[in-house]
Length: 353
Image: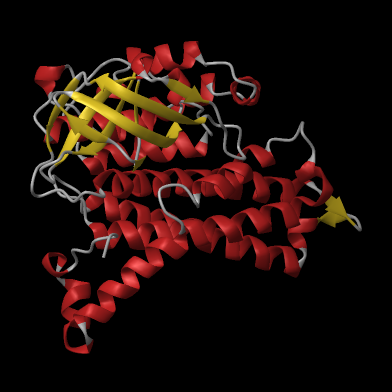
């Protein structure tokens, strides 16, 4: 299934996710044709059970889909929809086929089937039909809630530096579409962790594309009568870029490989730290090798680097996740350090500690 997913989404995005489409999306236009193609191929419901119209794909299978979204800078909430449907299934609410996003930065309260509060930095919020979030009740329980975007009292539009929609939604006694108590095996920061895992995969895909673009440019661009790729300084930079691409891919895929019902928080944190640090170095090298052309609007390099700069801080920065890892390691102590690294059962950590 993984190979089928990879070949299909790579071909689809290669054909439809053109630089022109990405630029149009950054100006505020919804890529309807691209989304229809993704729906026709079943990607929004890929992780859902077959009875819900999905392919019942594992996180390992889904990795290649989300990585491809980063590789082609796809301006759609497919990663968020996969996460949202996964959490709805875990809560027993069932996957959805309408355009779905998720919100990890929330201050929602739930009472008598209605919610009030704020959702911040909602990916593609203005284009979504509904949003999956977590809300607390007066009894101290956390609930998975599905909210209709149309019931938001206010939608304050915003974007990240890549021009991707990141909106603020306000709700006041809005009726929930569905809700259920968050399963006990999931932490209150489950959406933060799932989002971080997805962004790690997208970063890995974008760095792979950046490596290909930069290596190709270095082979074609000539200086002093020979390609700049022949110069040792450029070779060194390309080697470091390849190293960062490999590190981001391995870390992100390890997190997906360890995910089933319960997200591997230790691996997720390590993946987000590795991917975010790789994003910084990769973007710097890409612009260094390209020189002035890398800053022109017409050249596609900035399409990747602006997303790397944006995604490295979304769903927790490298500093945030490094702190979570450090606290967990220190709490384990020196005697449990090696067992913790080798035993997944000892790797639980909470970002709220």
